[in-house]
Amino acid sequence: MRRNILIYLLPIFLLSCGTAEFSPNQRFNSGSPQNVNATQIAKLAQKTPGAVIRIAVSSDTHTAYDDSRDFVKYVNSTGGFDFAVLNGDITNFGLLTEFEGIEKIYEGLNIPFVTVIGNHDENAEGNSVYQRMFGEKNFTFSYGGIKFICHDTNSREHSFDGTAPDMDWLRKNMVPDANHPFLIAFSHVPSFDGDFDPSLRQPYEQLFNTTSGVLASVHSHRHSTDSIYKPDSTSIPFIVTNTILNRTFTVIEISNGQLSTHPVSF
Amino acid sequence: MANLAHIPLVFRILVLLSCCSSGLMAQGRFVKAIIPDQAIIQYAGSIGYLSAGIGYNFFKEKSTLSFHYGYVPKNKGGELNIAALKFDYKPFAIKIGDQLVFHPVNPVAFVSYTFGQQFGFEFDSQVYEDGYYWWSPALRQHLGITSELKILGDGSSKIKSISLYAEANTNDLYAINWYHDIKGIPFTDIFRLGFGIKMNF
Image 1 (tube, rainbow over the protein chains, first blue to last red):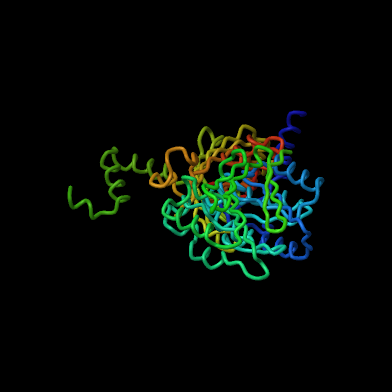
Image 2: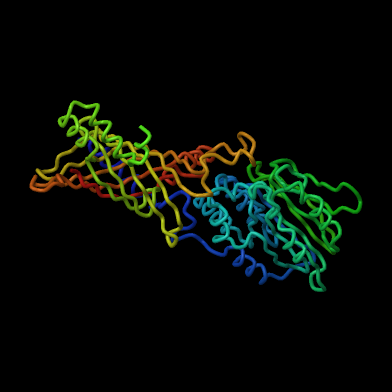
């Protein structure tokens, strides 16, 4: 009789904890968040920037919920950040449940966060999931006199067809103005990586190096210690940051048009 | 033989089979064998918003092999077309009165294939070197448990019984994410539900 009770309880247990799913590849379900980037940017617009702007740049969460929760806890308890960036590779397989899991954890931040698309996020229906949940893959926002240029550099996922990065979009949007004399770009794959379209590397780097007011281009993707690529004195710094999987993120500080970075382990 | 090419494939197979077999008896057996033991309609369960299938019983009805075709409409997160092949095993059968049989815990394994441009069996070898992404976007392998209640008919109808079932499944990718983040993802979080009805002939 006791065995029977256990047999009855097992399915009840499993059935009570799951949710109905139409496919791992579905683009959304009834509870999926929408337009997260626009909502978070609207939150940021309500903040008053101080003399120093401090950004917590995180990346490559790859569905590691435990490490991501610890990042959120650390940032919340340390304080002093204006906003956070999640610079791509939110997921491993581009699946809805992975996007939702990480988004929910980042919602726990007590500062706004902006999410950029990574190469893993473009797998399967990932492109559609990202665009419905977060918004356009190429977008800009501004804060404290700085215009932030977030864009898709995952060329391999576009079969190196010349559409990623979108050079026309970048030329149109990499434009400083009187209110926003400085620019900072965020994208996942750095231009000097094998996953970046080799035919676009030269015009891309040239655009960044010849546009006035560009403070840095910030990337990730490589899961390695922070590094800065700056081949000569006329080049802007191309910064590559670490991964949340290594329980490390990068602090970017901007003050009087000067940018500095340092990694923080948690 | 050349003119056979004009005859539909199914018909040709039937003709061949009937030629090879020893007359009507064997043909009758063959027809009996391909008529499914059950028709299935399922809601959710990771193989479509709705899916339809046919099943064949084995091992004195303890096991079923079933073929499903599922569809997710655009307004439910699609559009997706999915084919699935399921195999289940029902180790326990508990009789409740004369009319009900309860199969409380039944392991089920299935594979699902999602059709469409975004879902290659493998990633494009022109773009990715071997092993860059190691998984198949289209093919998922699922494991799960079902619980089934069979309502027996009175024998007067062609439908001998009707089964209602619920299923909890997970797949290779969800399991891998869990394995790499056991502290972060509760085991029960990787299961997804489906509900179905079977008409047993």
